[in-house]
Amino acid sequence: MTWASNWSGALATCLLCMRTASALPHIGDTSKLGWNMERPVMEDDSDDALVIMLILISAIFGTMLGIAAVFLVLYALVQVVRRVRRFVFRLDDDGMSERMRNQLLPDEDSRQSYELARAFERQYPYGSVDTQLTPEQQSLIREKGVDAWEFDVNLDVNAMQQSKTEVLFMGGDNCVQTNLPLPKSNSVYYFEVKLVEKPADVSLWIGLATKPFPAWRMVGWNKFSAGYCTNSGSVHQNSPFRGSRIGEPLLSGDILGIGYQPRSGVMWFTRNGRRYKEIVSGMLYDLFPTISADGPCSFSANFGQRGFVFIEANVKRWGLGPVEGTQQPPPVYGANQNTTLLETAESESTTPDSDDDSSIQPAPEDTVILIDGHSANERQHERRQRTRSGRRSASHRPPLYQKEDPIAAQLLEAGSTSLVPASYPSKQPESLEPTTSEPPPSS
Image 1 (cartoon, rainbow, N blue to C red):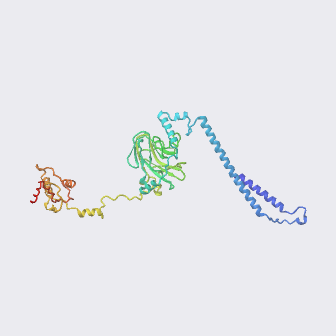
Image 2: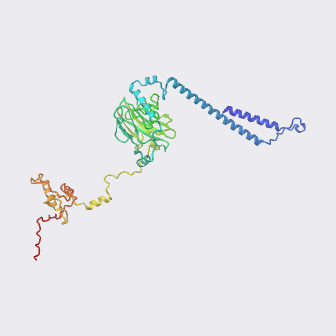
Image 3: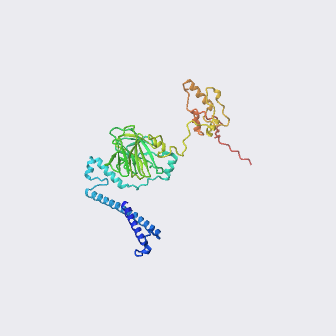
């Protein structure tokens, strides 16, 4: 911009000099010239200012166009060089040749996992599955709050879900993701993962990734993902070969935190409440909290349902959702006051049985006979006598229930005190003797 401003200033100076010379009287007219050195009057000052403004605007606009053209040319040259380099050296999307891949992937299993992951990316490119928050999911978040987030453990993953946010990996290469993505309404979202059990030779990868994601890959090894390796302290983004070390290795009991700014796509990390300066940029996707492991271990995630180790996240409330949703919690156990149902039951319940035989109330006259041959009161009295003596009568026999109400008879036999045993007369069978017809009247 310096050379453009100098050029426009020189041009404006030349224009002023030309206008001043044209305003002076003719040099041959001595009577008009004299020795009067007064400044000549300028009549077209407004026109000169407009011309100068137009020159400055054109100079600035031309300079911006030139800079943009230079950047476009450089970008095109870089792309051409990159394509030529890939074609000549036969590089893949990660910028690796076959020889370099063989060096970095020494065994057949790792090479097969890499090829399957690339095939998975081609089959499920970003955007092929709609992963934005649906109205139903947003309603679920409003109702449950932060408890709406939980890990999905599929059948093809060798892991066991101990709770919504706790997962136990049983062995092998496995990866789990949450059921809901990170929202985008707030400026910052934050969550923490605690390493509950982690052997020294097992690596956990904690980060963010799009969905679907290969269930056998570490987060950060595939496109549209970034993850922190607990054994090396390095962060990988979109590639298993290139990683930058930003922190220290983690052990059992350590807590790794991940912050995400959805408006800028910036991702950062904390370790035991201390934030690292390094960041990961370019993560402008629908991202899910993703945890991977290459062996048996367990972890516990905190999405905001309890306090964070990182104090700033607690103060600014950077959790994934509100601690409590709009859904009311269940009633407290034992809170039975002012309950209509319980008041009705208490009013209709009978007094508890006691050893005193006077507590047995006589049965009304219009009640049902539940047991054949014995009244209900007698059966209850006999049962109490057998209980006191500790032995059963040898003449005990199963009661004969009537078909009218077998359920009530079973409850009475079980010793229920809420039933009022009663009886009413059973139906008498009609006489089966044939009736004699009256003799016909004699004529």
